[in-house]
Length: 242
Image (cartoon, rainbow, N blue to C red; front, side, top):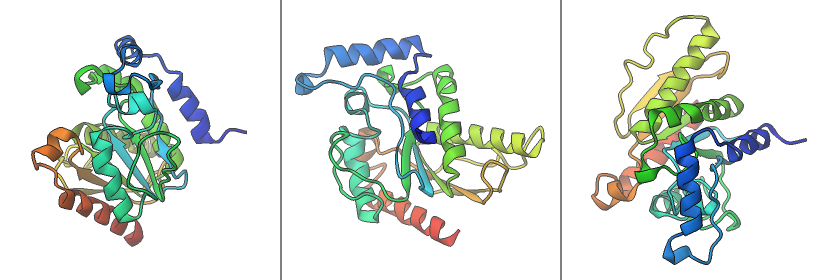
């Protein structure tokens, strides 16, 4: 019998809710980049992956046109992944520092990686409606995993997670609003926010913010390797401290 994650990932991969994104991801997969002309592109929504018992959930923005949209695995095959996975390996969350394909042997320990949007968007900019269409998938991952820490890579991921957490808390408590969520939470690199237990996540949850490891951020020095290393040290400390 398929696991909950396997069932969910089948739904994600078959999704065609957003006509603009379906057309774009399939065009990119058909035309290809010259450097990858001999490769078969994934060209479908990209599911999450990692340790199904993970205490840390990492949420990014969306697949890169010639990264995850090509390889079929989050943060694999592009500059963002080339910055992310060495840091995860250094921190002990990944068994290797490289992520090139779904068959490269990469394994995550105590971590599951996903995204706010599952299809590669034109200019790396999904619309609010497109992210709304994807939101139930991220909600379901949170409900299945019940993580102790959610690391939000970038402001968009942070704001999307806040929407989900506020909704889940409201639904679980039978209230119209939840004090402190999301109004008092502001995105800032390295910021940590505590979320109270609920019927969906029966233990305290920490939200940890980080700049996204995009080439735009890493090439300009907005996000350095040292800054990123500190995020994963902090994530490890948060799960151990409970």
